[in-house]
Structure formats: structure tokens, C-alpha cells
Figure 1: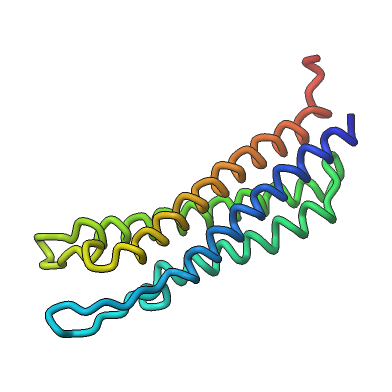
Figure 2: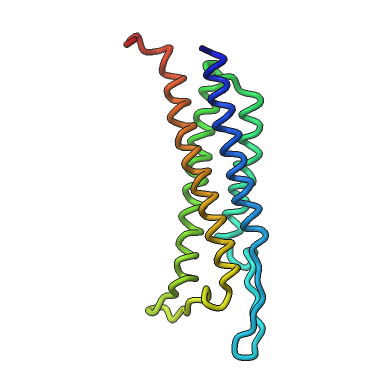
Length: 163
């Protein structure tokens, strides 16, 4: 049973690492230059702090997921500490996806009250990349939710005499 727990945990963590790496790479490669009323406009992820936060959060998640997949065995004392780290990473990912989603919505729809115009009509490829990064990021976030639930089950199972 311990080998099955280790296998499931490793597969979930490697899948989360893959999705996190994809999210970071897609976001980093999002850039486009266009001309608007004779003025050249460049859109890059690095111009938006929430997008930079997104890249850093998912790069950290990628590295952490690989380390946790290789080094931690479910059911050990260390796995309880990793569970706390998993929750922290889950919160980090939630913040990154939320911040990026909010800024993406402003880029797509603008904000009439603040006088911000939508830009996605002018830089469609850029907005498409950002959307792809958000989708990959959300997949990674969902996988981390599964990791947390599975880790909770693995930690609580020896404590419960319910079975």
C-alpha cells in the first residue's frame, strides 16, 4: 500500500510540475508588437507585475513539485511537513491565478469607470498566450488541490481506526 501511495503522490506532483512549467513558459513567451494610430505598442508579460508574479509563482511551484516528488515518501513524518508546504503552494497558486485573471479581464474588457481601454483587440496573440498560461495555471492549481486532498488522506489514514 505504501508503494501505491508513493506512486500516486509522485504522479500527481509530476503532473502539477508539468502544468506549472507549461504555465510559466507560455507566459514568458507572451509578447506582441503592434501599431496603433501610427504608434508602436509592445505587450510583454514583464510589463505587468501580476504576470511577473504568475511566472515566479509557477517557477517556484515547478521546482518544489519536482523536489517533493523525488524526496518525500507518503506516510513519513516529513510528509506532514510537506503537507503544510503543499497548502502554502496552493495558496500561492491561487493568488497568482486570481491576480493574473483579474488583470487579463481588464485587458480584455477594459474598465469604463477608470477610463482603461481594452487592448486584446489590438494584441490578440498576446492575449491568447496569456489565456493559455491561465489555463495551464488553473490545471496546476487543480492538481495541487488533489495533492492536498490526497496528502490529507494519507496522513489521516493511520490515525483513523474507521476501517
